[in-house]
Amino acid sequence: MTSRTLVAQSQTPDGEALTLTLEQGDHVVRVRGEVLMSSRVSGSEEALARLALTERDMRRPPRVLVGGLGMGFTLRAVLDALDDAAQVEVVELLEDVVRWNEGPLAAYAGQPLTDPRVTVIVRDLLTHLTQATSDYDALILDVDNGPEAFTVAANQRLYTPTGLAVMFEALRPGGVMVLWSAFRAPRFERLLRDAGFIASTTTARARGAVRKGARHTLFKAIRPLPR
Ligand SMILES: C[S@@+](CC[C@H](N)C(=O)[O-])C[C@H]1O[C@@H](n2cnc3c(N)ncnc32)[C@H](O)[C@@H]1O
Image (tube, rainbow, N blue to C red; front, top):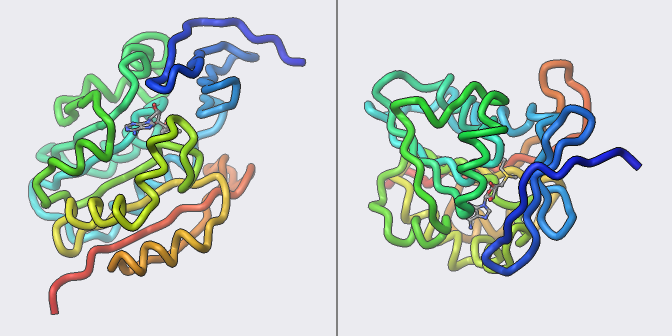
């Protein structure tokens, strides 16, 4: 068994253990002892941002939401893809994750929380989207290990017709939602279509730069423009 050094610990709103450990030089965040994220690989988390933002007809200034923060890899790729006028909201459920990103995790993604384009909102994603004005250009979502609740049980609402309707309404027409998954989920693509999105699925390697590592699934869902 690899050695683990406990760096910090906390609890999720469900009362489950949330830990930050150091393992062979990498930081790992676990919920209930299961890996939520690791600093070891970030290729597909970065690819998720590019999938949402490249070749899109963005307004100026673009308004983009990243949910959740994790270790900031997706956020860094978002910032690198956007110009100075962009507004990037990061919605993160767990305050401790934000604190860890201001401390031991800050360097992994080049301290993205210090970027003046970023606003951090410590809040449940669905609660935030329910109250948002419907004009996001992009929703870039990676809160569980796929379209199934993992971090907290309440996240299951996100992957239902009701949750998808909230995402649809939060986007401007022509806006895009992307979602990261560790596994294939063809049923979810059908749910996206049923919710009115133009949906597609692609894959990205965990170690993107060298095209190696596990193949992760990326869902892309566009809110159609009115005819
Ligand atoms: C797998 S990590 C994201 C990894 C991230 N893409 C990166 O590049 O490091 C999932 C994140 O979503 C957050 N999260 C989980 N449920 C959430 C919710 N309902 N609302 C907002 N953030 C949530 C977790 O606390 C965690 O920080």
